[in-house]
Length: 403
View 1 (cartoon, helix red, strand yellow):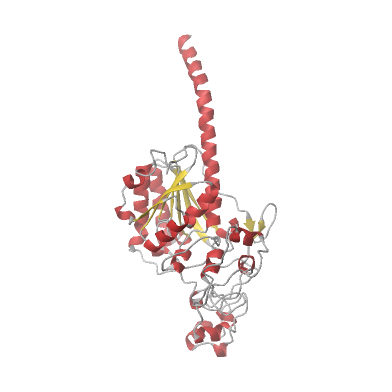
View 2 (cartoon, helix red, strand yellow):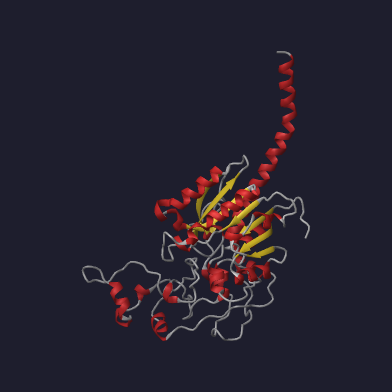
């Protein structure tokens, strides 16, 4: 497919199911090439981004030429991606020698060869503190050595219209003369000035019908959209898919019925808790602990959700209880809390992993729009230099002639 010379293009490494590309597409970028080794994720990506060349390949064996073959000689405006992060994620077992910790080196290897105008790397907030911030310092140092100026900042997805308190670090780097800045928040817990209120779980989910079980037939919409976010989710969607959830185990159900909205395991009466949880609830004095835990937490309709992980089907692992129903989140509900529109298809197996590992599209859109603004600024400055350069040259020539 021919590329429009005026259309900003990007390449998405570690593309997963396409959340980052979806947001960049909404911002105005065209993803020309996407790469990931997970065949289930790349099948989902292909189903939603038919105009993109998708390479199902390990980045460790990827060559820059395999990307250049598909960009038609164009200069790449943006290289984006989120190298796998489980080795230093706060939601997993932190392991210093996890090989996934060093996949960013292959990302930078490709970046150095492609020399894009801008580089964007997304990763977990835990990278900031893991091993005294070693990975953050290493990435910034290598980007600088490559001739880029770079910066990093933690962004909260809820600040950009995503109904989820998901914090991620974003690295931005450019070889242009434009100063690096990050997008301003558009939403806040306390709306003031131009800030809108956070989008809540209720706004994201409450136009959906009840779930009858994991094997039940997929229901249809039973109510019209009532909020701006629901209208965004349902735009162009003619049917409701993947609104299914796993039934709770007997033990999980016995706990869930005692968990009130916005509360977790600590709100369950001591006498009905399994023994292993009773041990978690006492302090040195023998009194019950009052601190927070998100185990068996029931989401509040009045707030954004906590981070959606790959384990959202298991309420014992985190805050994934539906606000009103005694069940985990459905696939579609989790996707909505990530800000994927209802038209977005998830195919193959491991759908929870595809959803939980994704970049929320609306967060990606905000970052993409900001980078696009900086790209436009870059072109404007280049244009200005081109106009002023002849005048400067004439002045220098005059000075040399009449010295």
